[in-house]
Length: 55
Image 1 (cartoon, one colour):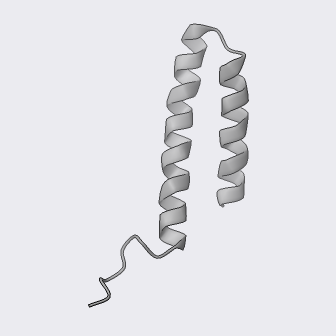
Image 2 (tube, helix red, strand yellow):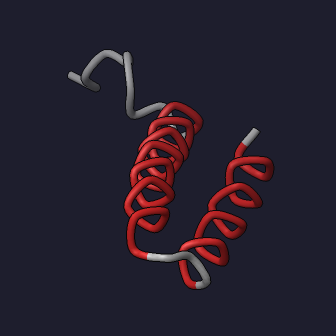
């Protein structure tokens, strides 16, 4: 799952570099969502989300 997100993030970053200002804002909003989704997926994989404390 994170590989697909990484690819999406890279594509959005490339699109943002070549976009006009109005389009760039929309792409950057999509990029923020993709980054947050990736971070949540990585945290879940590492067991940081929804796990009980070790004590």
